[in-house]
Image (cartoon, rainbow, N blue to C red):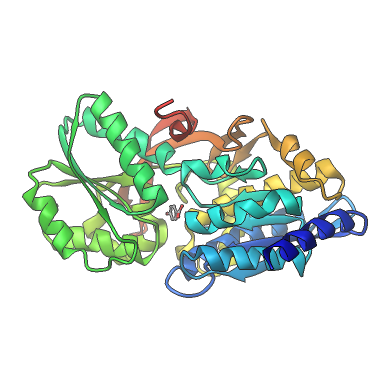
Length: 390
Ligand code: PHB
């Protein structure tokens, strides 16, 4: 069966080159279930890009086909990626909110002659699984390293870390610890919790008991992060003087109304804030707000998706619509542009973005709404996760 699928993929990759005047892009993400808002942001970013740039590259019409993987499920992701390639004849695979879903589809890329543009999944190692992977999001190494320096600058010496026990969580734990201990701090305890955890009260007790001055946390954005920050607020950690430090996944804009006043003052580092002050972001937020319907639902996966479409359009342009994954990927190595998040470049070695990472503080605006206020910029950050320990 497996051999049959591989042969079918290879045959299709050869045959489809000649008649591709509609170019199909297959997007895998969570479009239903608890993480549906994250998938909705993928779609809003893609729709916004098409609204601004049109649905044609040269003579080629771009068609986006969506497939739903509601929660991390590598087997389902792989099966749907195969179906998109074999039955739908997609020339590009994109999306991938969760790391395990992206990882599972990478072995198909070479035989299928299909590039993969990752719009969210943030474990450093994914780009090493295939030369046909390009990423337009961030890595948790990239976003968790600067917050360690921020913590030291604030005079924090002892931290407890809490992460979801899978790729991006383990990366975040390692990134924070490496940077924090190099700067003279100490991680007194490192807790890994199952992805499915939804009762965070026992963890909050452990954080209190640890004697740490701050907690560093990473969980994948969605109901998980909302629950975790709520538990931090409701279990009196702030009153006990335990500072909260995290990458921006923990304070995504769409969660801020539900977190309310208790979240103000939380410090995070991240590649994108909806409030980012630039003409590119103003235009993006306008288009993405229209696409999503309710602007309060906008969050970071929309920008990964918007930039992902930019990369796919460049690939289609470079290949003249022919199916040639190697040529497509070569064409975007070193590509620079003004993203809504700021200036970005695809590093030719890693095929991952070099970008600014911003320190932000949750604040209340004059309009009474909460937002991530950018207060410091760490410019041109590569991915430390790819060089760590080498
Ligand atoms: C991932 O699974 O790589 C992932 C998901 C959600 C995030 C960050 C990383 O917020």
